Image (tube, rainbow, N blue to C red; front, side):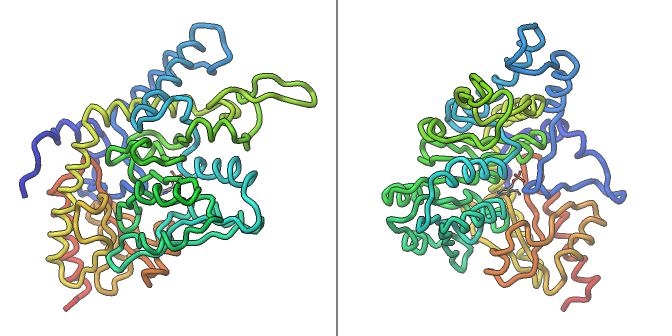
Length: 412
Ligand SMILES: Cc1ncc(COP(=O)(O)O)c(C=O)c1O
């Protein structure tokens, strides 16, 4: 396969020091990017520079360091907002996707939804977009889950059939962290809005890997994690339409989120600060800003193209491994760079151990999507997930090691 030239692979890989280490005396092949991504020196330097040169608490101080730190923090917000075509005041910093979804559950759903109201989701959600809504059952809210088709794509007709005049929210992942399926979020948003429901997009696996535009998706909320897009852990964002965020009550209280406080009352700060109680993860936000710069420099179109090519190459190579079952859509264009698989009846944990002995890092288990595993009738899968720094040679190494595993397990 001819890989497109625009991605300077050597240059990119040199930015990620961890990629040159060995694991079990073998060069590291890092295929666990859906769990978390590696960090380029540019991100580490930005955080280091903040602590070495500008460290101060933000928003409150008049002194130079406080102003510099505040500016850097707010610049980072502007960068992540621009990346998804949102306004800075529509971006609330959170610890990640999980906290962003919880923010909507506590600040929007808990106050608004009533007995009889319905939420529609899908069977392919990560636990953070599943369990979060279960707690609303105590209020008499029903949560329904659209099914998938045999090829691992969303059954849109089934989702449409679940919508009623009681549906208040449709919440779904844009890219499945298990099957790699890319969901037709725009079409879902149209259906949801025609039914008067809002739409929340779990973008943990999409924003890092492809251009995402909240306006063209026409979603109402969108959640993302910085650590899955070259940024540090402990930082993420909730995007919300301004008028929705304005109408929501905070669910965390403390300093920073107030405009005025009296002993028996308080007024909330303006957006997005009213949702950001306490001292935030300043260095994390700055690191995320640097990650956005890095992704923009390479270009998300280019990253997406690279991952499609890598996935296509992987699907071809894995097809050659007898007895290997790959789950999810058949065509690389229809999926993110995530490939879940099982080889004969070798348990996924054993498979991950074999691959690790060759320096290949994959994830194994239920991938925080137990209902999806139940739906697929599987106890577990191994999952290889790619990013911009992965190469076709690494994919070949995976395929070779799987062939060796066949021999070790004496598979026919
Ligand atoms: C689709 C999806 N949603 C949500 C999450 C949760 O992200 P975080 O743990 O960063 O909050 C993940 C993490 O793997 C994910 O893959």
